[in-house]
Length: 243
Image 1 (cartoon, rainbow, N blue to C red):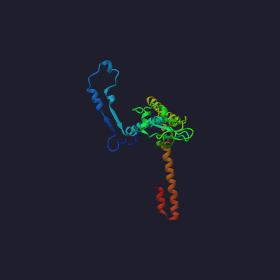
Image 2: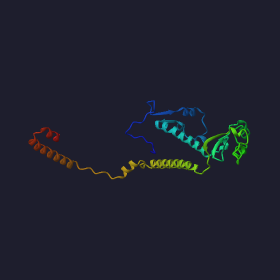
Image 3: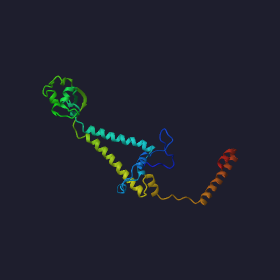
Image 4: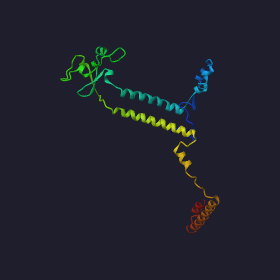
């Protein structure tokens, strides 16, 4: 991350349920090639036909739906932030701040147009359905209204979640742009790769000195083991040490 590059030491993942590493769709390229040739003045501003070739790898099929889910979540957040009870045949109980739903279809047809647009906002309110002083219903239709457990509180705090979501998206876009810039410049983009390239190489000991030290250790091990076996009569220990 954030380049999603494959490690050269592992096998490229296959698409689930197949033995393929990628899926290619060339039908759009073939369709463009069969179309009549466009004037040169227009073709010079258009990409080549190969530009429209689509290739999907395992990562694309995995993260592609996640991007679509993110867009759906943003649309859901938009509906939550712009929610108004009166747009859905609902109003707020002034005594408890709980949402009440109007179920009288004849009454709703007078307040909304055929396409669902609110045309008489004064009809969708607590004051139009109940007496604000005594709390008595003003009509038999109001007695059919359903009191829900949801509360409606108009507050600016609901925009905090949207601000955090937009901030995360902005950070992700900036990170991708920085990574693409470093790739174009040939700079390391991974922290491990950056640390390895900046650290000085570790010097290796000369082979002659290493061989001399190994021979000395081997001789001392065998000589000490021989003395030990002569006194304890355990030849297997001497053989294991020299081995």
